[in-house]
Length: 176
Image (cartoon, rainbow, N blue to C red):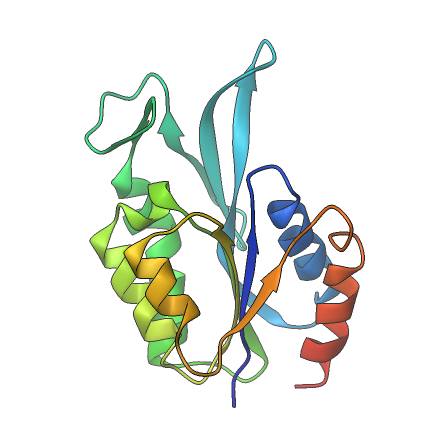
């Protein structure tokens, strides 16, 4: 059975750092997916960038984007999800490769604004592929349902466990 791991935590707790460290530790695996990171100007957060495991990068959300959709003060460019994130995710769910691992950072409000992304995530969690995803801690119908699916392992990321978590997960996933 494929691994289904959701790393849940509050903003700033270290979910992105943990998933990036996990990817670095599993460099022998065929990793697909993406991470996100804040864009800062003069110390202030102005947006978020998305970077694929293959190294493609684009601005996903920015205070200067008009929207819709808007998440808080950020306009979200759903085309970034369609162009960068979705092709590899859809390919992984349709035809999982041996030793393939899908990493998603994150299942958050900006990413979930894309209906096609939500559908790709549903497909991934039904496919025979290992998935590790970060997820926000607040309630959302999509992520709440995902957390309740059979076979899901929900791990709370905290300041106490965030440093040891990537190594622990890497050890488990290397032996799959």
